Image 1: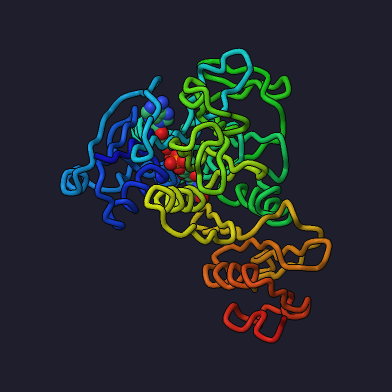
Image 2: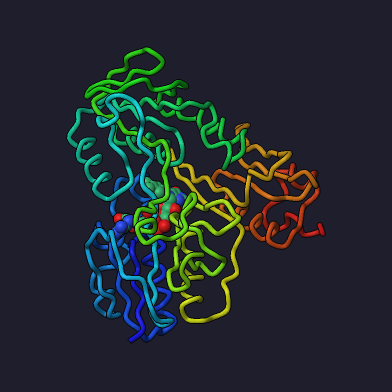
Length: 380
Ligand SMILES: Cc1cc2nc3c(=O)[nH]c(=O)nc-3n(C[C@H](O)[C@H](O)[C@H](O)COP(=O)(O)OP(=O)(O)OC[C@H]3O[C@@H](n4cnc5c(N)ncnc54)[C@H](O)[C@@H]3O)c2cc1C
């Protein structure tokens, strides 16, 4: 009987299983994950909640076997009917300073549950230090302050998410923390203790310390299997490992050869859809323009396209004089990226424009009265 064995039950692994079910795959499907029932990661930092993708009954109904196990070795497939899919995601980057073990991370359901317990049982106004103001650190800082904590956010930059949001919006969002009572410090962590962090020589007291300084692809199993690994498990456009045709890699752990590694939720889902197409010998999946979101302080922030390609930006402000949308043009004046605050329709519009290669005029981009439905309508 043909088989697909998926290692990793994050959004990539789960989506692949769901796609195979929807496409009436007739072989056996199994998912191994060291953490058990597959769940989604974005809610962990936004609400400290654990949200499984589906109840156990769904897996039973569709004949999917779930194994709670940490897979370190595997026999590689020997026939064209059998597939191994590595969807092993990422692991948090660990701080390299004395006392780093005193800092919690926020990457798993267990991490979120432990942090929620500490915040729930702590006194109102408990001191929390968050090290790293990227997507996860900034979201957790916002969540912890909603739990009533006194939060200090330490970053080595004044615009921590500039490479993905664009400089202006990244600066504004970072500065916005102050209005919510979060203290931001730009500096370098020297050391950590059980109840303090030393930043640029200054000792800051804390009852809870969380480190969120980035993630790295989890490739231990791929390396054990002798697969090509270089900033991720190296795959072709069909998600096949370049080392073995019957091994696929998807999601944050995978990197298409010759391209940068994508580390976002939607990209992981598209990898999974492509893996299902490869397994079922179906037409390749049409990739969409990159998109991701982050939520903090009741603001929904979205980025479309790639700010790494941006040469100039055009901004729009809201009625209170705050940046609402930043459009990014490349060196040829082509629209290649945009970031927006609470601008869901605009995000969709820009996605469409970038996909079709349409760049609205500068006047249109600047004019807040030109809404997402008409933006770019006259442009070619
Ligand atoms: C706290 C948090 C908040 C986030 N918020 C956002 C957001 O707002 N927007 C956004 O676009 N993205 C966000 N992301 C990123 C997004 O969640 C990831 O891009 C996505 O989860 C990647 O999915 P994945 O399936 O590739 O990997 P993961 O979700 O990391 O899942 C990998 C799974 O593999 C398992 N595994 C690994 N190795 C083994 C092994 N050897 N044996 C068995 N099991 C193994 C792990 O236990 C894990 O469950 C966030 C991530 C985190 C951690």
